[in-house]
Length: 483
Ligand code: F0G
Picture (cartoon, rainbow, N blue to C red):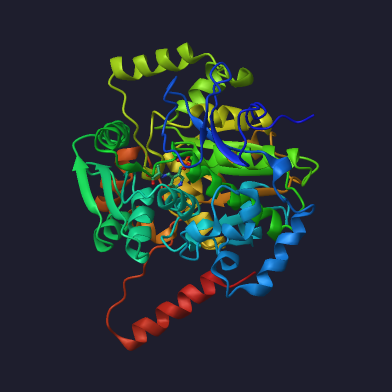
Protein backbone atom coordinates (compact mmCIF):
# COMPACT_ATOMS: atom_id res chain seq x y z
CA UNK A 1 0.00 0.00 0.00
CA UNK A 2 1.46 3.34 -1.04
CA UNK A 3 1.23 6.02 1.60
CA UNK A 4 -0.29 9.36 0.82
CA UNK A 5 1.97 12.40 1.21
CA UNK A 6 0.87 12.66 4.83
CA UNK A 7 -0.95 10.29 7.20
CA UNK A 8 -4.58 9.51 6.35
CA UNK A 9 -7.10 12.23 7.13
CA UNK A 10 -8.17 12.30 10.76
CA UNK A 11 -11.85 11.47 11.25
CA UNK A 12 -12.46 15.13 12.14
CA UNK A 13 -11.57 16.22 8.59
CA UNK A 14 -14.80 16.18 6.66
CA UNK A 15 -13.74 18.09 3.56
CA UNK A 16 -12.24 16.70 0.38
CA UNK A 17 -9.21 19.02 0.56
CA UNK A 18 -7.43 20.29 3.64
CA UNK A 19 -3.99 21.40 4.83
CA UNK A 20 -1.76 19.39 7.11
CA UNK A 21 1.57 19.86 8.85
CA UNK A 22 4.12 17.45 7.34
CA UNK A 23 5.67 16.64 10.72
CA UNK A 24 4.14 13.28 11.71
CA UNK A 25 4.49 14.03 15.41
CA UNK A 26 2.30 17.14 14.90
CA UNK A 27 0.14 16.46 11.80
CA UNK A 28 -2.13 19.39 12.66
CA UNK A 29 -4.85 19.96 10.08
CA UNK A 30 -6.36 23.17 8.74
CA UNK A 31 -9.03 24.04 6.23
CA UNK A 32 -8.11 25.18 2.73
CA UNK A 33 -9.83 28.46 3.56
CA UNK A 34 -7.11 29.20 6.13
CA UNK A 35 -3.78 30.91 5.43
CA UNK A 36 -0.61 29.51 6.97
CA UNK A 37 2.91 29.61 5.64
CA UNK A 38 4.20 27.45 8.48
CA UNK A 39 2.42 25.21 10.94
CA UNK A 40 1.14 27.49 13.74
CA UNK A 41 1.77 24.68 16.24
CA UNK A 42 5.28 23.49 15.36
CA UNK A 43 6.49 25.82 12.53
CA UNK A 44 7.06 22.96 10.09
CA UNK A 45 6.02 22.94 6.42
CA UNK A 46 2.42 22.40 5.37
CA UNK A 47 0.94 20.20 2.62
CA UNK A 48 -2.31 20.42 0.75
CA UNK A 49 -3.88 16.97 1.19
CA UNK A 50 -6.89 15.37 -0.45
CA UNK A 51 -9.46 12.81 0.67
CA UNK A 52 -9.27 11.18 -2.73
CA UNK A 53 -12.08 8.72 -2.09
CA UNK A 54 -14.49 11.65 -1.84
CA UNK A 55 -13.31 13.12 -5.12
CA UNK A 56 -14.03 12.24 -8.73
CA UNK A 57 -10.65 11.28 -10.23
CA UNK A 58 -10.38 10.01 -13.82
CA UNK A 59 -9.34 6.35 -13.98
CA UNK A 60 -6.85 7.02 -16.78
CA UNK A 61 -4.51 9.96 -17.26
CA UNK A 62 -5.33 9.99 -20.98
CA UNK A 63 -8.81 11.28 -20.10
CA UNK A 64 -7.31 14.72 -19.51
CA UNK A 65 -6.63 15.01 -23.23
CA UNK A 66 -10.32 15.26 -23.98
CA UNK A 67 -10.22 18.78 -22.54
CA UNK A 68 -8.06 19.91 -25.45
CA UNK A 69 -11.16 19.87 -27.60
CA UNK A 70 -12.71 22.68 -25.55
CA UNK A 71 -9.85 25.13 -25.31
CA UNK A 72 -12.11 28.19 -25.41
CA UNK A 73 -12.89 27.42 -21.80
CA UNK A 74 -10.02 29.11 -19.84
CA UNK A 75 -9.75 26.27 -17.35
CA UNK A 76 -9.18 23.80 -20.17
CA UNK A 77 -6.78 26.13 -21.99
CA UNK A 78 -4.55 26.40 -18.93
CA UNK A 79 -1.87 23.72 -18.81
CA UNK A 80 -2.32 23.74 -15.04
CA UNK A 81 -6.09 23.66 -14.64
CA UNK A 82 -6.61 21.15 -17.42
CA UNK A 83 -5.50 18.78 -14.65
CA UNK A 84 -7.70 20.38 -11.99
CA UNK A 85 -8.97 17.01 -10.71
CA UNK A 86 -5.43 16.36 -9.44
CA UNK A 87 -5.25 19.65 -7.51
CA UNK A 88 -8.87 19.93 -6.42
CA UNK A 89 -8.67 22.54 -3.68
CA UNK A 90 -10.49 25.43 -5.35
CA UNK A 91 -14.03 26.10 -6.55
CA UNK A 92 -13.81 26.79 -10.33
CA UNK A 93 -15.13 30.34 -9.92
CA UNK A 94 -12.13 31.25 -7.71
CA UNK A 95 -9.49 30.13 -10.19
CA UNK A 96 -7.06 32.84 -11.36
CA UNK A 97 -5.53 31.90 -14.71
CA UNK A 98 -3.67 33.82 -17.40
CA UNK A 99 -3.22 30.87 -19.74
CA UNK A 100 -0.09 29.45 -18.13
CA UNK A 101 1.40 26.05 -18.87
CA UNK A 102 1.46 26.08 -22.70
CA UNK A 103 4.90 24.53 -22.55
CA UNK A 104 6.78 22.05 -24.68
CA UNK A 105 8.61 18.79 -24.26
CA UNK A 106 11.29 19.02 -26.92
CA UNK A 107 13.21 15.96 -28.17
CA UNK A 108 16.86 17.07 -28.16
CA UNK A 109 19.19 14.69 -29.95
CA UNK A 110 22.08 17.13 -30.31
CA UNK A 111 22.03 17.81 -26.60
CA UNK A 112 21.69 14.05 -25.95
CA UNK A 113 25.00 13.55 -27.72
CA UNK A 114 26.63 16.12 -25.43
CA UNK A 115 25.13 14.49 -22.35
CA UNK A 116 26.20 11.02 -23.51
CA UNK A 117 22.74 9.58 -24.08
CA UNK A 118 21.59 7.50 -27.01
CA UNK A 119 19.59 9.22 -29.72
CA UNK A 120 15.93 9.63 -28.87
CA UNK A 121 16.56 9.40 -25.14
CA UNK A 122 16.68 13.03 -24.04
CA UNK A 123 13.85 15.54 -23.83
CA UNK A 124 13.96 19.13 -22.61
CA UNK A 125 10.85 20.43 -20.86
CA UNK A 126 10.88 24.12 -21.78
CA UNK A 127 9.08 26.01 -19.03
CA UNK A 128 10.43 29.29 -20.43
CA UNK A 129 7.30 29.36 -22.61
CA UNK A 130 5.14 30.43 -19.69
CA UNK A 131 3.66 33.97 -19.75
CA UNK A 132 6.33 35.33 -17.40
CA UNK A 133 9.07 33.18 -18.94
CA UNK A 134 9.64 30.64 -16.19
CA UNK A 135 8.09 27.62 -14.49
CA UNK A 136 6.92 29.85 -11.64
CA UNK A 137 3.62 30.61 -13.38
CA UNK A 138 2.51 27.03 -12.72
CA UNK A 139 2.72 27.74 -9.02
CA UNK A 140 1.52 31.34 -9.14
CA UNK A 141 -1.82 30.48 -10.74
CA UNK A 142 -2.52 28.10 -7.86
CA UNK A 143 -1.31 30.44 -5.11
CA UNK A 144 -3.24 33.41 -6.57
CA UNK A 145 -6.30 31.19 -6.67
CA UNK A 146 -5.88 30.48 -2.98
CA UNK A 147 -5.22 34.18 -2.28
CA UNK A 148 -8.53 34.93 -3.98
CA UNK A 149 -10.27 32.23 -1.94
CA UNK A 150 -9.11 33.92 1.28
CA UNK A 151 -9.72 37.47 -0.07
CA UNK A 152 -6.04 38.50 0.15
CA UNK A 153 -4.95 41.50 -1.91
CA UNK A 154 -1.42 42.45 -0.94
CA UNK A 155 0.89 39.66 -2.10
CA UNK A 156 4.64 39.44 -1.51
CA UNK A 157 7.69 37.30 -2.19
CA UNK A 158 11.45 37.27 -1.86
CA UNK A 159 13.08 36.33 -5.11
CA UNK A 160 16.16 35.68 -7.16
CA UNK A 161 14.05 37.17 -9.96
CA UNK A 162 11.62 34.71 -11.49
CA UNK A 163 9.16 34.41 -8.62
CA UNK A 164 8.99 38.19 -8.48
CA UNK A 165 8.50 38.44 -12.26
CA UNK A 166 5.66 35.91 -12.11
CA UNK A 167 4.10 37.64 -9.11
CA UNK A 168 4.22 40.99 -10.89
CA UNK A 169 2.71 39.54 -14.07
CA UNK A 170 -0.20 37.90 -12.24
CA UNK A 171 -0.97 41.18 -10.48
CA UNK A 172 -0.82 43.25 -13.64
CA UNK A 173 -2.55 40.80 -15.99
CA UNK A 174 -5.56 40.21 -13.75
CA UNK A 175 -8.05 42.82 -12.66
CA UNK A 176 -8.71 41.45 -9.21
CA UNK A 177 -7.14 44.13 -7.03
CA UNK A 178 -3.86 42.33 -6.28
CA UNK A 179 -0.89 44.50 -5.31
CA UNK A 180 2.66 43.07 -5.71
CA UNK A 181 5.45 43.66 -3.19
CA UNK A 182 8.75 42.00 -3.96
CA UNK A 183 12.01 41.68 -2.03
CA UNK A 184 15.29 41.19 -3.85
CA UNK A 185 18.91 41.04 -2.75
CA UNK A 186 21.27 43.82 -3.81
CA UNK A 187 22.87 43.27 -7.21
CA UNK A 188 21.58 39.69 -7.20
CA UNK A 189 18.99 39.74 -9.93
CA UNK A 190 19.43 39.33 -13.68
CA UNK A 191 18.25 42.36 -15.62
CA UNK A 192 15.66 40.46 -17.65
CA UNK A 193 13.86 39.60 -14.43
CA UNK A 194 14.25 42.99 -12.77
CA UNK A 195 12.89 44.55 -15.95
CA UNK A 196 9.73 42.48 -15.60
CA UNK A 197 9.13 43.43 -11.96
CA UNK A 198 9.55 47.12 -12.77
CA UNK A 199 7.56 47.08 -15.99
CA UNK A 200 4.63 45.25 -14.41
CA UNK A 201 4.43 47.78 -11.62
CA UNK A 202 5.51 45.79 -8.55
CA UNK A 203 6.65 47.63 -5.45
CA UNK A 204 10.28 46.51 -5.62
CA UNK A 205 12.24 46.53 -2.37
CA UNK A 206 15.94 45.93 -2.72
CA UNK A 207 17.55 45.04 0.58
CA UNK A 208 21.25 44.96 1.38
CA UNK A 209 21.86 41.23 1.46
CA UNK A 210 21.22 38.11 -0.59
CA UNK A 211 18.20 35.91 -1.29
CA UNK A 212 18.44 34.10 2.03
CA UNK A 213 18.33 37.45 3.84
CA UNK A 214 15.42 38.67 1.71
CA UNK A 215 13.52 35.43 2.36
CA UNK A 216 13.87 35.83 6.09
CA UNK A 217 12.66 39.44 5.93
CA UNK A 218 9.66 38.82 3.71
CA UNK A 219 8.42 36.16 6.12
CA UNK A 220 8.65 38.63 8.98
CA UNK A 221 6.94 41.35 6.99
CA UNK A 222 4.16 39.04 5.80
CA UNK A 223 3.61 37.91 9.35
CA UNK A 224 3.61 41.42 10.82
CA UNK A 225 1.45 43.07 8.14
CA UNK A 226 -0.77 40.12 7.24
CA UNK A 227 0.47 40.12 3.65
CA UNK A 228 -0.08 36.97 1.59
CA UNK A 229 3.22 35.18 0.93
CA UNK A 230 3.85 33.82 -2.57
CA UNK A 231 7.14 31.97 -2.04
CA UNK A 232 7.14 28.20 -2.33
CA UNK A 233 6.66 27.74 1.44
CA UNK A 234 3.11 28.46 0.36
CA UNK A 235 1.82 24.89 -0.16
CA UNK A 236 -0.60 25.96 -2.91
CA UNK A 237 2.34 26.99 -5.12
CA UNK A 238 3.50 23.38 -5.18
CA UNK A 239 0.05 22.12 -6.19
CA UNK A 240 0.35 24.10 -9.41
CA UNK A 241 3.93 23.00 -10.01
CA UNK A 242 2.85 19.34 -9.94
CA UNK A 243 1.33 19.91 -13.37
CA UNK A 244 4.77 20.22 -14.99
CA UNK A 245 4.97 16.47 -14.40
CA UNK A 246 1.49 15.86 -15.78
CA UNK A 247 2.36 17.71 -18.98
CA UNK A 248 5.61 15.78 -19.35
CA UNK A 249 3.73 12.48 -19.01
CA UNK A 250 1.10 13.72 -21.44
CA UNK A 251 3.79 14.57 -24.02
CA UNK A 252 5.35 11.12 -23.52
CA UNK A 253 1.95 9.53 -24.16
CA UNK A 254 1.65 8.76 -20.47
CA UNK A 255 4.76 6.61 -20.38
CA UNK A 256 6.86 7.31 -17.31
CA UNK A 257 10.49 8.25 -18.18
CA UNK A 258 13.47 6.82 -16.29
CA UNK A 259 14.74 10.16 -14.99
CA UNK A 260 13.50 13.65 -14.24
CA UNK A 261 16.41 16.07 -13.78
CA UNK A 262 15.73 19.46 -12.22
CA UNK A 263 17.84 22.32 -10.86
CA UNK A 264 17.48 22.81 -7.10
CA UNK A 265 17.30 26.23 -5.44
CA UNK A 266 14.56 26.70 -2.86
CA UNK A 267 13.56 23.10 -3.72
CA UNK A 268 9.94 23.87 -4.53
CA UNK A 269 9.94 22.14 -7.90
CA UNK A 270 11.61 18.94 -6.74
CA UNK A 271 9.19 18.83 -3.78
CA UNK A 272 6.20 19.35 -6.06
CA UNK A 273 7.40 16.68 -8.47
CA UNK A 274 7.75 14.17 -5.63
CA UNK A 275 4.23 14.96 -4.44
CA UNK A 276 2.88 14.54 -7.97
CA UNK A 277 4.41 11.08 -8.27
CA UNK A 278 3.32 10.01 -4.78
CA UNK A 279 -0.27 10.97 -5.61
CA UNK A 280 -0.29 9.50 -9.12
CA UNK A 281 1.01 6.21 -7.74
CA UNK A 282 -1.45 6.27 -4.84
CA UNK A 283 -4.29 6.82 -7.30
CA UNK A 284 -3.08 3.99 -9.51
CA UNK A 285 -2.66 6.37 -12.47
CA UNK A 286 0.95 5.26 -13.01
CA UNK A 287 2.51 1.90 -12.24
CA UNK A 288 6.09 3.06 -11.63
CA UNK A 289 7.87 6.26 -10.70
CA UNK A 290 10.94 7.73 -12.40
CA UNK A 291 14.10 8.57 -10.52
CA UNK A 292 14.60 12.20 -9.58
CA UNK A 293 17.92 14.01 -9.88
CA UNK A 294 18.22 17.41 -8.19
CA UNK A 295 21.13 19.54 -9.35
CA UNK A 296 22.87 22.13 -7.18
CA UNK A 297 25.40 24.70 -8.35
CA UNK A 298 28.72 24.17 -6.57
CA UNK A 299 28.47 27.69 -5.09
CA UNK A 300 25.05 26.95 -3.55
CA UNK A 301 25.32 23.31 -2.60
CA UNK A 302 23.36 22.84 0.62
CA UNK A 303 21.32 19.88 -0.64
CA UNK A 304 24.36 18.17 -2.10
CA UNK A 305 26.28 18.62 1.13
CA UNK A 306 23.47 17.54 3.43
CA UNK A 307 22.25 14.55 1.45
CA UNK A 308 25.42 13.50 -0.35
CA UNK A 309 27.93 13.99 2.44
CA UNK A 310 26.11 14.36 5.77
CA UNK A 311 23.59 11.62 4.91
CA UNK A 312 20.48 13.61 5.73
CA UNK A 313 17.40 11.51 4.85
CA UNK A 314 13.61 11.68 5.03
CA UNK A 315 13.19 9.04 7.78
CA UNK A 316 9.40 8.96 7.62
CA UNK A 317 9.14 12.70 8.09
CA UNK A 318 11.63 12.98 10.92
CA UNK A 319 14.97 13.87 9.33
CA UNK A 320 17.84 14.66 11.67
CA UNK A 321 17.44 18.45 11.76
CA UNK A 322 20.50 18.93 13.95
CA UNK A 323 22.52 17.98 10.83
CA UNK A 324 20.95 20.93 9.03
CA UNK A 325 21.43 23.29 11.95
CA UNK A 326 25.10 22.45 12.31
CA UNK A 327 25.68 23.02 8.58
CA UNK A 328 23.98 26.42 8.75
CA UNK A 329 26.03 27.31 11.82
CA UNK A 330 29.15 26.47 9.84
CA UNK A 331 28.01 28.66 6.92
CA UNK A 332 27.44 31.59 9.28
CA UNK A 333 30.62 31.09 11.28
CA UNK A 334 32.73 31.02 8.11
CA UNK A 335 30.77 33.80 6.40
CA UNK A 336 29.87 31.54 3.47
CA UNK A 337 27.28 33.05 1.13
CA UNK A 338 25.74 31.39 -1.90
CA UNK A 339 27.54 32.37 -5.10
CA UNK A 340 26.92 31.09 -8.62
CA UNK A 341 26.41 32.42 -12.15
CA UNK A 342 23.09 30.54 -12.00
CA UNK A 343 21.63 33.40 -9.94
CA UNK A 344 18.17 31.79 -9.86
CA UNK A 345 19.50 29.01 -7.62
CA UNK A 346 21.92 31.13 -5.59
CA UNK A 347 20.34 29.94 -2.33
CA UNK A 348 21.95 28.37 0.73
CA UNK A 349 18.91 27.88 2.96
CA UNK A 350 16.28 26.11 0.84
CA UNK A 351 12.89 26.48 2.51
CA UNK A 352 11.46 23.25 1.10
CA UNK A 353 14.35 21.07 2.20
CA UNK A 354 12.19 18.56 4.09
CA UNK A 355 9.69 18.11 1.29
CA UNK A 356 12.56 17.60 -1.13
CA UNK A 357 13.91 14.84 1.13
CA UNK A 358 10.51 13.17 0.84
CA UNK A 359 10.64 13.45 -2.95
CA UNK A 360 14.16 12.00 -3.07
CA UNK A 361 13.07 9.14 -0.82
CA UNK A 362 9.99 8.28 -2.85
CA UNK A 363 11.65 8.60 -6.26
CA UNK A 364 14.97 6.89 -5.49
CA UNK A 365 16.49 10.32 -5.98
CA UNK A 366 20.05 11.55 -6.26
CA UNK A 367 21.67 14.95 -5.79
CA UNK A 368 24.46 16.20 -8.02
CA UNK A 369 26.57 19.31 -7.92
CA UNK A 370 27.94 21.08 -11.01
CA UNK A 371 30.39 23.94 -11.43
CA UNK A 372 29.63 27.27 -13.09
CA UNK A 373 31.94 26.21 -15.94
CA UNK A 374 29.82 23.11 -16.53
CA UNK A 375 26.62 25.18 -16.32
CA UNK A 376 27.79 27.71 -18.90
CA UNK A 377 29.10 25.02 -21.28
CA UNK A 378 25.85 23.06 -20.98
CA UNK A 379 23.91 26.26 -21.56
CA UNK A 380 25.76 26.88 -24.82
CA UNK A 381 25.06 23.30 -25.97
CA UNK A 382 21.38 23.63 -25.08
CA UNK A 383 21.27 26.91 -26.99
CA UNK A 384 22.81 25.26 -30.04
CA UNK A 385 20.57 22.20 -29.88
CA UNK A 386 17.47 23.11 -27.94
CA UNK A 387 15.15 25.95 -27.12
CA UNK A 388 17.60 27.57 -24.71
CA UNK A 389 17.45 28.57 -21.09
CA UNK A 390 18.96 30.78 -18.44
CA UNK A 391 22.03 29.49 -16.58
CA UNK A 392 20.06 27.79 -13.75
CA UNK A 393 18.09 25.82 -16.34
CA UNK A 394 21.26 24.48 -17.90
CA UNK A 395 22.26 23.07 -14.52
CA UNK A 396 19.84 20.21 -15.21
CA UNK A 397 21.66 19.31 -18.44
CA UNK A 398 25.09 19.71 -16.85
CA UNK A 399 23.91 17.48 -14.00
CA UNK A 400 22.56 14.83 -16.35
CA UNK A 401 25.94 14.78 -18.12
CA UNK A 402 27.77 14.30 -14.83
CA UNK A 403 25.41 11.50 -13.75
CA UNK A 404 25.78 9.87 -17.15
CA UNK A 405 29.59 10.00 -16.89
CA UNK A 406 29.41 8.47 -13.41
CA UNK A 407 27.29 5.62 -14.78
CA UNK A 408 24.30 6.55 -12.59
CA UNK A 409 22.29 7.32 -15.71
CA UNK A 410 22.65 4.71 -18.48
CA UNK A 411 22.98 5.72 -22.17
CA UNK A 412 19.67 4.03 -22.94
CA UNK A 413 17.73 5.69 -20.11
CA UNK A 414 14.87 8.01 -21.06
CA UNK A 415 15.74 11.33 -19.48
CA UNK A 416 13.76 14.56 -19.13
CA UNK A 417 15.70 17.69 -18.12
CA UNK A 418 13.63 20.66 -16.98
CA UNK A 419 14.60 23.99 -18.55
CA UNK A 420 13.12 26.17 -15.85
CA UNK A 421 13.56 29.67 -17.25
CA UNK A 422 13.67 31.48 -20.58
CA UNK A 423 16.96 32.08 -22.35
CA UNK A 424 16.41 35.86 -22.40
CA UNK A 425 16.07 36.17 -18.63
CA UNK A 426 19.82 36.62 -18.26
CA UNK A 427 21.37 37.83 -21.53
CA UNK A 428 24.43 39.19 -19.72
CA UNK A 429 25.75 35.71 -18.89
CA UNK A 430 25.09 34.51 -22.44
CA UNK A 431 26.77 37.45 -24.15
CA UNK A 432 29.73 37.30 -21.76
CA UNK A 433 30.24 33.66 -22.76
CA UNK A 434 29.93 34.08 -26.52
CA UNK A 435 31.11 37.59 -27.32
CA UNK A 436 34.88 37.36 -26.98
CA UNK A 437 34.93 40.60 -24.96
CA UNK A 438 37.56 39.68 -22.39
CA UNK A 439 36.64 42.38 -19.89
CA UNK A 440 33.02 41.31 -19.94
CA UNK A 441 34.01 37.65 -19.64
CA UNK A 442 36.28 38.36 -16.69
CA UNK A 443 33.79 40.47 -14.79
CA UNK A 444 30.71 38.28 -15.36
CA UNK A 445 32.14 34.76 -15.64
CA UNK A 446 35.81 34.82 -14.66
CA UNK A 447 34.83 36.11 -11.24
CA UNK A 448 32.77 32.89 -10.84
CA UNK A 449 35.63 30.59 -11.74
CA UNK A 450 34.59 30.09 -15.38
CA UNK A 451 37.86 29.83 -17.31
CA UNK A 452 36.91 28.94 -20.88
CA UNK A 453 34.11 29.52 -23.34
CA UNK A 454 34.75 26.26 -25.17
CA UNK A 455 31.45 26.34 -27.06
CA UNK A 456 31.41 30.06 -27.80
CA UNK A 457 29.80 31.25 -31.01
CA UNK A 458 31.76 34.44 -31.54
CA UNK A 459 30.24 37.34 -33.45
CA UNK A 460 32.37 38.14 -36.51
CA UNK A 461 33.54 41.71 -36.96
CA UNK A 462 33.77 42.76 -40.62
CA UNK A 463 34.46 46.07 -42.33
CA UNK A 464 31.42 47.76 -43.85
CA UNK A 465 32.47 46.54 -47.29
CA UNK A 466 30.34 44.30 -49.55
CA UNK A 467 33.26 42.15 -50.82
CA UNK A 468 34.58 41.65 -47.32
CA UNK A 469 31.16 40.63 -46.09
CA UNK A 470 30.66 38.15 -48.93
CA UNK A 471 34.15 36.67 -48.43
CA UNK A 472 33.47 36.28 -44.73
CA UNK A 473 30.16 34.52 -45.28
CA UNK A 474 31.83 32.13 -47.75
CA UNK A 475 34.63 31.43 -45.31
CA UNK A 476 32.33 30.73 -42.38
CA UNK A 477 29.82 28.77 -44.47
CA UNK A 478 32.62 26.40 -45.56
CA UNK A 479 33.87 26.07 -42.02
CA UNK A 480 30.43 25.14 -40.73
CA UNK A 481 29.26 23.06 -43.73
CA UNK A 482 28.03 19.57 -42.79
CA UNK A 483 30.66 16.86 -43.42
N1 F0G B 1 15.41 27.60 -12.13
C1 F0G B 1 14.97 28.86 -12.20
C2 F0G B 1 15.02 29.54 -13.51
C3 F0G B 1 14.51 29.51 -11.02
O1 F0G B 1 14.09 30.77 -11.10
C4 F0G B 1 14.53 28.83 -9.80
C5 F0G B 1 14.10 29.46 -8.56
C6 F0G B 1 14.98 27.50 -9.80
C7 F0G B 1 15.41 26.93 -10.97
C8 F0G B 1 15.00 26.71 -8.56
O2 F0G B 1 13.73 26.18 -8.30
O3 F0G B 1 13.42 26.96 -5.97
O4 F0G B 1 11.94 25.25 -7.00
O5 F0G B 1 14.31 24.69 -6.44
N2 F0G B 1 13.91 30.69 -8.45
C9 F0G B 1 13.34 31.33 -7.25
C10 F0G B 1 13.03 32.78 -7.53
C11 F0G B 1 14.07 31.07 -6.02
O6 F0G B 1 13.02 33.57 -6.59
O7 F0G B 1 12.74 33.11 -8.66
P1 F0G B 1 13.33 25.74 -6.83
